[in-house]
Image (cartoon, rainbow, N blue to C red):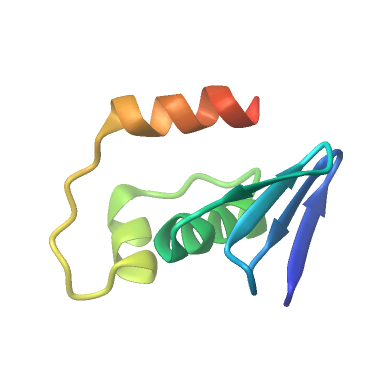
Amino acid sequence: MKTVSSHNVILDVLRNAMIIDGESNPLSKNECFLIKYLYERQGTSISRDELTQHCWPGRVVSVSYTHLRAHETTLHL
């Protein structure tokens, strides 16, 4: 899948970018993968363990909720 689209937001997974109202916003590879994973599972509960296993297998993950909140606010989710 090259892009994921919802309303005025397009996730371009080949370029690791989110296009909002025509403006491209660069993402890290992990940010892009995480947003795609959450989008594909919208409407379902996803545990932290599930996210860790699918997005960062074999790694110890420390989540900065402040950082995630900033992205959520920016993306109007």
